[in-house]
Image 1 (cartoon, rainbow, N blue to C red):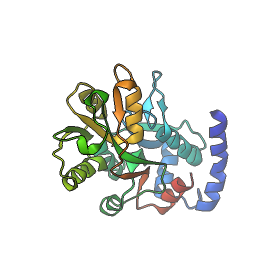
Image 2: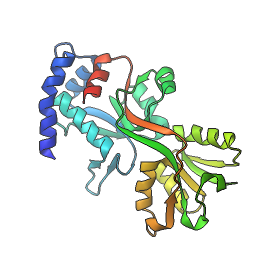
Image 3: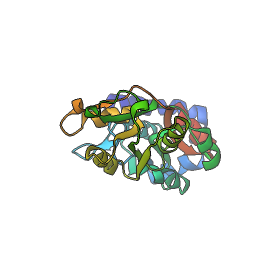
Image 4: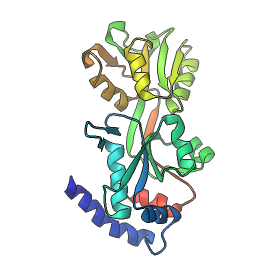
Length: 247
């Protein structure tokens, strides 16, 4: 692992030459260097993407990307302050500059870039919106999921696409919307929802940790959306966006 970050740190020199860092560093890079750490917004706990282990260390793809950016900017992958955020508070935190970088399995959309004045420098992971439900329900396709209550996280593309899909397919779905993903998972496993909708990778990780084991739950094969997930920055610093893209 340390060899990996050592390589990323040496790669910093190439990025500096390409982007003019530090001679013409942008505002974000200057503030990170002055602070001595990268403030990276992550999830409150999304297995495989960003969650704390028993020792309190952040693990997962998004957490590792934060470390890679810290290595590029500061020469040390350990200089990251992880800021756990709900889906509904992630963009306000970025806009208020409480974080330098948002890496919270966030879907890249044109609407978000235009209305929120942010940039998605690259795609980090490609996924699709799926549905998980108890195997005992005997359902194998979405068309059979009638009069259902669906668990969905607040402030996500899943929430809006769930409504669009139900409307266009004549399905009487009632969403159970919550701000906390952990509370949402508890509600689903407690039987308060007939199904849980989220990115397929997120549901797979949740299924593996299901009470009683993963065999009691299934993820339906349909995907109702394409979800290009990636890091997000404000659109007022082109050098910062370019640096994140190169990493």
